[in-house]
Amino acid sequence: MNIRRWFGILLFGCFILPAGLFAQDEAQNEEFPNKEENALCLKCHGNQVYPMPVDGTGETVLLKMCRGDRIDTVAYYKGNHGTFTCTDCHSYEYTTFPHNPNLRLEQMPSCLDCHDGDPAVEKYHFESIDEEYRKSGHANLDSTLFSCWSCHNPHSFRLAVRTDINISALVKYDNSMCLNCHVNPVNPDYYLGGGLDLIVAKHTWLPKTENHFRNVRCIECHAKINENVLVPHNIVKKEDAVKRCVECHSTDSRLLHTLYKYQPQQARQTKGFVNSVISGQGYVVGANRSILLNRIGIVLVICTILGIGIHTTIRIILK
Image (cartoon, rainbow, N blue to C red; front, side):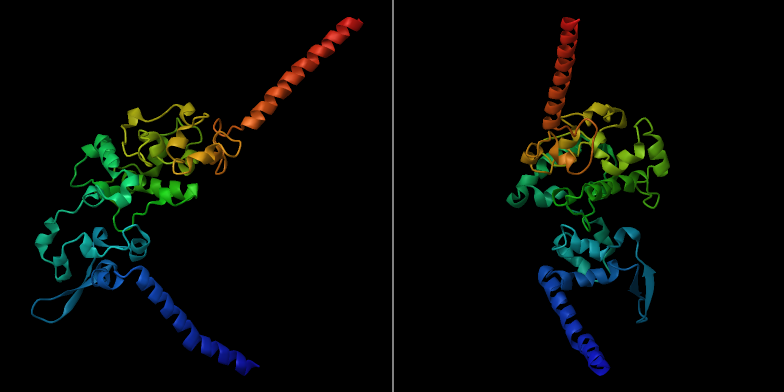
């Protein structure tokens, strides 16, 4: 019995498991046919160190890869640009190593260089997004330090807002873009100082501050709503940010035009709740109102008043 068991384990380990892994690799290669071509770049840029040949000696030394040039390969192939080859955006001259130093002056493509006028992404209104961005406070920053890529890393960005129905994960993912500049001291080019404690301190006027941070995105209050785009990009100055509670805590909650905007419009009125989309994810005071319960409450109040009136009238008559 033991012999058969060990033989089965040996068979699985030597033949079945490798065959499964091979099949998985084949499936991944079919999904990402660019992997083999990208391997030339990622063998250096996907690691913390890379080998640099020493001129005339035939030897190599290991050098540290700069943080800004390092790519998380797992995040890259999970991102929206994961099907691209590196040379789709970068010069083909990068396939020669060591790289020509002049390539650092290469002008990187912007979002609209690829997405402008493309019928495949027309529904996302990239032109409107670019127009909104140019009105924002971010557009006034030094373009050499700040661009679309500062928030939307082309090597890992994914359109979570259109695919992820987990609101908590969505909030965390989107807020991380803001905090990458406004909190993170590891990012010295963009670091605005102060850390998370200072960010929280600046929002102490907001009741249950940390609870808000966990459940809504920064842009819910710090960006102007545009019905033509799913995610607002017109970031306003801090003095123009939303500070009225009723903006979110009402029947026509601001959140329906921002955070929950990706949900189907019809879903808002199909479950008996004015803001049914929010009711399925959490509770927002003033926004989660049931029409049915409101009507029942009104009927109960009327019945109570009538009951008291009838009772009082009868007591007066009998007296």
